[in-house]
Each structure stands twice: as structure tokens, then as C-alpha cells.
Image (cartoon, rainbow, N blue to C red):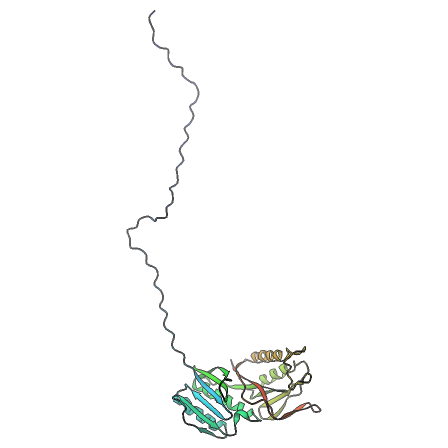
Amino acid sequence: MPKGPPPPLPVSSGILPTPVPKRKQKPVPTNNPPPSYHSPTLPPARKVVPLASPVHFASLMLLGTDKIRMAGFPDSCQELLGCVLNKGWTRAEGKKNPAPGVFEWKLAKSPWATDTPLASYRLIEFILFSLSKEGWSLSFSAGMPAKRGARDTFFFMPTERRQRQFFSIVFGTHTVTLLDATDPRVSEEFEQACKTWPRGVGAPYSREHGAFTININPMGDSDTAWPTTGGKYEHAMPQLMCTILQRMALAGYECVTTYDIVDRQAGWHWNDAKGLLTGSMPSIDVWVFAER
């Protein structure tokens, strides 16, 4: 029997599945930047800071009981200080220069060891005023205990000329004295500050023109009115000093330096009946104020 053609293949009537499109793969990041055919970017140039101009300091040292020595000042200041000492003190005698750029004077009546030091404090104020007017500003002061016969040393730096008025507050063993107040408000603030003393104070009085003293009532059996070790009033003195600084700041003045030049072993006596300090006025410390 003859073979016929093969039967046709069966045709599926189902729908063919749609092919799933391939996901586009993200390019793998590389650390290498794309090639550049331009000049590379240079880092910003460092700013050239000009060298600071040298700062010059000069010193004024109080020596022994009657000497004053300046170093590092120009010749014009030596002439100026010579005139100031002769105007502000009884007599000042220039001595031979101990070293180049150094000049020294010897003052009459031992101003750094007197029992009545108000004139010495005023001399310091006059010196500071004159040097400030000449263009030398007080930077700070320091004690020189390691040097024989040295007391305090004042350091100055050149600035603009300024007529700066100075006044002092002197802390004594039983007193606080305001010397040469430049403004009536200074006197008012000074008195209000002293009234904060826990044991009370006496009424202000004046032994000489421009000097107003307030007696501080002592605490316990101390040789001074200021308790320094132990007791509930140990903090009273620094608190009073802070109050004085705050009051002076309200009046527009700041403390520019402190010093101590007069021996504390002076002839004084506290009169309990009168509540007054009699005799001389030994100082514990002197604060110098000036307008801001």
C-alpha cells in the first residue's frame, strides 16, 4: 500500500507568553575620574600673612626707698620724667646711667618708705598721666621680690597719645581711701561699695584735699580689719574688692594696675573708743583706675 504524505503538525490555539525584557544593568562606578584633556585645577594659593611689627616694651622700676629707674624709653621720655619728678616731688637728682638706655633718679625724703604715703601715690599717678600723654600706655606691673631693694616695676608699650586721668584706691590695714577721684560719681560709687562690708563702716572723712578715707570695722582680734584665714568672714575682703570693681565699672572706669610700695610696718593705732585709725596709714595694696 503506497505511503501518503505525513499528516500536518497540530497547531496550538494557546497564546504565546510575552518575552520578559532584560533589565538594564547600571554602570559599575569606578574611582577613576573620566579622562580630561584640560589642565588640572591647582589648589588655591595660600594667603601671605604679613609679619607683625615688633612690639617694644619699656620699664619703670621703684628701687629701695628713694630711687626710680627707667629702661627702654627714648631720650625724650627721660627728659620728660626728669621734669615730672622735679615738679611732683621735693627734689630729684639724676644719677649716672647704670647701663646703656637706662637712667636713674634719687628722690629726697624716701618716698617708697614714708609713713605718709599719699604724696607717693600721687607721684605715681602724675608719672602715669605724663607718660600716657607722651604716647606710652601702662601694660601691667609686677613685683620683683628676688631683686634686692626692688619694689614694683611698671611696664609700658607705645600707643597713641592720650590724656588719661588716673585715681587710686588704697587698701590700708583698717581703711579704704579714695585718692584724687576724677568724677563725683566715682566718690558716690566708692562709698556705696564700702557700705556692703558685713561689720559696717564709719563715715567718710578727709585728712587732706582729695583723699577720702572710710574706716572698716575690724572682725575679731586680727591686726587688720581683713580676715584672711578661717572663719565665716574669710570671703568678705575679696567680695568687697569685687564690689568696688563693679561700682567703678558702672561709673566708666577700670583698674589698670596694682602695686605696693610702702612698708606695712608703720606706726598706727586703732582707737576702739572713737572707731578711728590714728597715726600713719600703712598700705596693703594700691589700685590705680583710669577711664575706659
